[in-house]
Length: 237
Ligand SMILES: [Mn+2]
Image 1 (tube, helix red, strand yellow):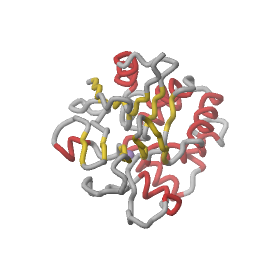
Image 2 (spheres, protein in one colour):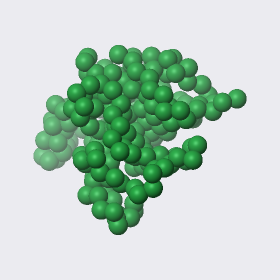
Image 3 (cartoon, protein in one colour):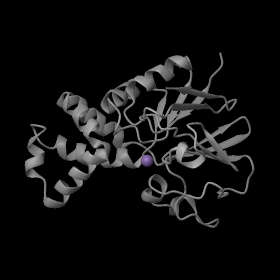
Image 4 (tube, helix red, strand yellow):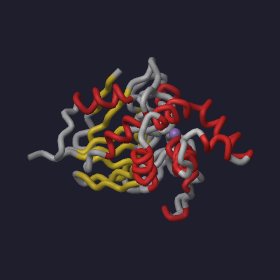
């Protein structure tokens, strides 16, 4: 039996492309998939992706900035018996942040969460609260540091424990930055769509940095999947 490890990022609610990708890579119960955050917002069915991921014990999500924002409002939403009551009860600051979230892609997440039962929403919140900020994968004598955005405020002497959540899920580094001296360590990230970096919806390699967000939610973009065993790339439109 061959066990294979895949990474995807920034699914952004693109449920149909996500399902097509799982079929393309023939994802099985023996394989492992890491999803590097920004599962929600913008695309057609964010909650559908979360429910699918939750049902698979071999899918490992990481936290993205959009997931973090969605989780904040899901927690408020779940504290009320009727899902729309919380809008009336929110304080001024939350209310203005909520409008910002809806207009920056949160509308599809909110709508898809409203279609679920209270119990499903509670399960999703518990699931998202466990999302780690990074993962380290050792494979074939290589080490992959998986993170949503990168190592913001990078300094060579800065310890991993010193990075804030915001630095790991919100930052944009210069792609040429060498984060680790060891040539066998690769940093795999999403967050910044590769069309903005190299002009094409392809996985972008720069030094030991690998950017895999190819704009899954956008009609011009693609969902990318990288196999960490052999570095093979898969795409669906
Ligand atoms: Mn992001």
